[in-house]
Each structure stands twice: as C-alpha cells, then as structure tokens.
Length: 347
Image (tube, rainbow, N blue to C red; front, side):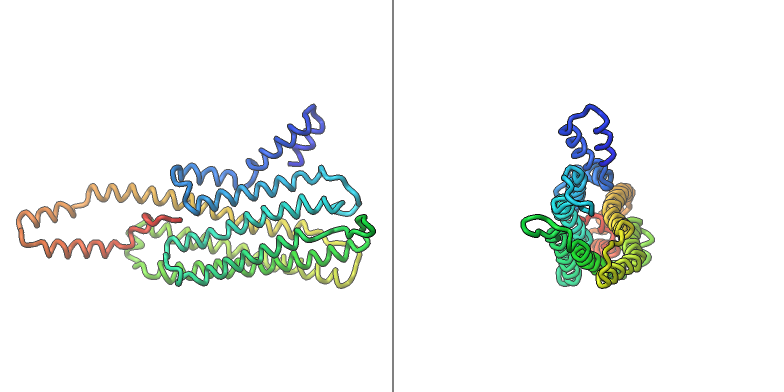
C-alpha cells in the first residue's frame, strides 16, 4: 500500500482518489483474496453454509485491519520515536487489531465447525469447544492489550516520552507472552481435533473400505495433513518466538533505554498464521473437488450396478424371496455405510 501512496505523491492524483484506490486494493491484494474467490466460485448457491461464511468474514476483517494500518502515514508526528504519536498507535494498530483478531477468532472456529459437521455429537467434541473458546479469550485479551496501550504518557495535558521505554517494554512482555500462549493453545487445539477424528471416524473405518472408496481416503488425507502441517509450523516457530519474548523480558528488567526490533519475530508469527489460515481455504477447495468427483463416480457405479437386475431376477423367478432380497439389501447398505461421508453437509 505504501508504494501506491508514494506513486500518487509524484502524480497529479487527488488524495481522495489515492486513498480510494488504497481502500479497494487492500481487499484485492490481501493474501486470502484468491482463495476466498475460488471457494465462492466452487460453492455458488451454498454461500450460507457456516464454513463459507467463516472463510469470507475471515478475509473481510483481515483486509479492513490492513486498510487501517496503511493510513498510518496520514497521522501527524509528534515525536521521533515510533509510533511517533499516541494517535499513530491507537488507529493504525489499536483499532486495526480489533479487525485482525476478530478475523483470527472467526478463522479459529473453522476446525471446530468442520469437526462438528462430521461428529454431530456435542458431548464427544466438548474438549474441542473448550479449547476453541479459550483460544478466543486469549486473543480478546491481546486486543485489550493493544487498545489500552498508550506509547506516550500525558503529562500536564501533553504527551511525554519520559516513560516511553519502560511502557513499551511492559507492553511487549504482555504482547509476546500472549503470543506464546496462543501457540501452545493452537497446538493443543490441533491435537484435540486430530485425536477426535481418528478415534471417532478414521479408526472405525475398515481398511478395505478405505482402499475401495477414494473419497474417504482423500478425506482422511487432507484432514490429517492440514492439521499436521499446522502443528509443525507451530512447533518450528515456538522456540524463536519464545527466545524473543525472553529477550523482551530481560531488556525490560535491565532498564535499558533501547528496544529490540520485533520485525523478525512478527514476520515469523505472521508466517505461522498465514500457513494455518491458508490451509482452511485449501482444505475446503480440495473437499469440494473430491466430493464432486466422488458423486460422478457414484453415478457411474449406480448406472452400471447389477444390484437392481439381480433383485428383479429373484422377484420374477422366486416370488417368495422377499426376505432374502431384504437381507441382501441390508448387508449391502451396512457394507457401504461409510461411503456416504461425502453427503454430509460439511458445515
């Protein structure tokens, strides 16, 4: 966005037009825009499904937060120290964090909704509910930390930088301590989801059925690897962010009047978030693809199945064989009971 602003300064474009361009571009240049467009196109007519709503609003609120941050250059500077004024923090970061964390909270409900759609028993997934809600509370706490932070204390009615380093150090301890808690809960969340899917679904499906039905195999594959990739990214990021948090604490207690740049740590945190949330969109796109392919395969199987012909043969030549036919159909239905997973409304 800053490139657009610099470009506009060297051209005869009015400020109003410039920021209208920035406003629109923020939605399009968001890293989730392409994913959300693909999801909407693949689910035309099904946009009211909870998972589609979750994916859409995750992208929308994240984009709004990015827009607010892109306007930070408009705010007059009062000090030489970042963020240069109290307003320079409150609006581009404090208010923007409301939309950032709202976006994350909405996105964090995706694994729960996906699990609930398959295991429609609240008692069996109660632990997932508890972890998800705890995760949300931790992020609400982080938003409170952002919105209440005042970089420059008001002294005699005017902002002052006399306690700047001390206040910034305390804020960073809260911020990155909260990030560490988020990583731990995120890992436990993924662990709880994959454990429930295995114990309640995958372990109960016989291997021969898994081999014969590609949809179930693909469903299991993307369910497990989506969560495993998320867990691996969390594990890799944890030691780096933990060390940065420790440095923030050490620096604050040593009372040094300097700050450690958080750009590298924030880049790592954003990388983990982007991986986890991008996997939501990829997961939904792949699920849709496998469902459609499996439906086509079932239609072909249905048209070529000899089941109807054999039943007709029995009824025609063995009028008293209704019990045998009924038993045959029950056996057939039992054998293929897991083949209907794709007809679950994956909310």
